[in-house]
Image (cartoon, rainbow over all chains, first blue to last red; front, side, top):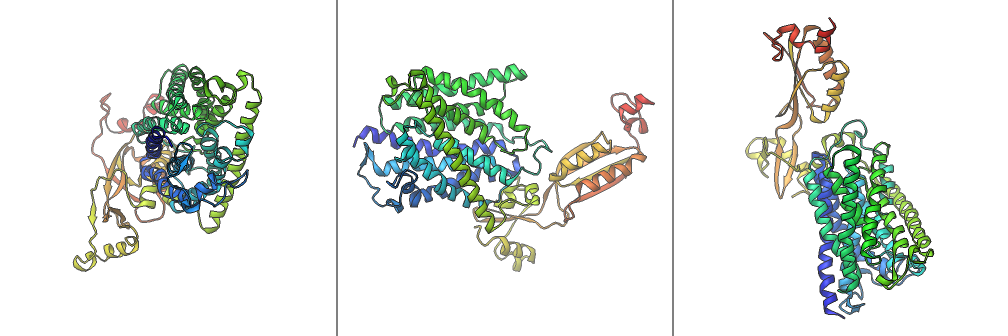
Length: 431
Length: 121
């Protein structure tokens, strides 16, 4: 047990937890006003539902001994997860740190399906996905599974988190079909400052995500920290320059997006490449995601907030670049292609492909399963009115005009049977 | 000349504008308004406080048209704004005494005729 390692991972865990509310702001700003709360709730509720599933079974399936493909249930309900050291930190802290990763990974998927999914089925999807898809993939890479044995490098989850979430996002967006207004009406972000705030908070939290993944307060953590700072800087510069060259204008939504793309790309590489390599990686990563965004907008794929372009493309570039730029003189673990180990690139590619295939298949199965129990997609009417009012009975920006307070005895005392009926119909589970 | 005033659902505004554009109605003004037209009230709850939204958000369009444009304009709105449920809104057609185009000082018929048509005749 090491006290300084413990102190750093405690802080890092809190930083990563902040990324999920940050994602809520990032996504929430990009949708229309009438869906702001629904979109933010999709991230916020992951904190509870995925967190709970993680404590009950997810952690054990990811980090239990098990086999090459999945862990076992030996640590279900946190059995044996106590204060004894896991590496140099308490096992319980390792569990908590990993839990914050499960939460944000599942929440990332929501960006592909905003403004059109019923909330109940979404919660079921989110929870099932974190157990059925996320936990096994985390086991492959970090829990001693087959990718770990093969020597795949994924420092903080480029494949496990970002490629995994993006493959799920692609499948669920295709299965839900586009929003009814998609490619028919202009669908504009309702609050770009929220998106910039979210991007800033994501970057802040990402220091915990990447540097915390060293699981120690040491030089590798410092390397991951510096790289997490440098790569998005380079992405932001290249993205802005491409924006300027193409249209003569640097956009704020573009800047927010580029920060996330840079962070995603450096995630698998953070503690494995030199700082100059991280700058190069960040700069290079801007281009595929930039053009993937442009291309996607012209297709029938309503991946509404571009999870695939940002996390899928960015994560794949990062995972492959790790296989090219990894440098044993910095990380003490392995070299990449540029430093005389071409095999690493092949291993990285195998990791990405296997994750995409597994995540896509698992996601498909979960959505099909949910469809057996009821309609997954919101009705056209609810989509028109907005999901805030129809799914949550709240508005993000209510002016309060024309709102009449419904008292429990309103029907009797004010002769307003309508109010009493409305309360009886909808008030039951809501207060 | 008539003033067509339409009150429609905000979520149908896109359809209405598209339909008006197809009917070649070019000049209009719109406002976000709140009102009540007999529809069921939305019930919202904030931390145990339950409220009934007596007023719902609507969009009010004002379109000044020449007489032969009244029918196409009204039809365009009726067809695009209808969902069949209570709360679809209303269209009012009002007589207009005088119209001036500020830029040119043109009056009445000439002032509500789209610019391209003036150029053509």
